[in-house]
Length: 77
Image (tube, rainbow, N blue to C red):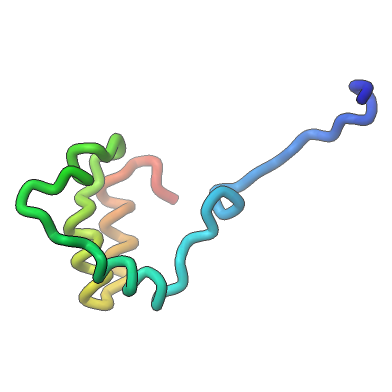
């Protein structure tokens, strides 16, 4: 392929992972073990309080869960 036929590629976060529907998020949240010393929290480079985020989803409070991501992670949104 020559350079004059190449086209730039654009992407969005939605293209990488479109997210979950609310029922899917709830189902996944119920899989969480709610560990006393959660390795997910230690492994999160964005320092998101993942256990709290998952608890909010389990409680059905999607708006607060989204707000928690925005509060903890400067890269969110």
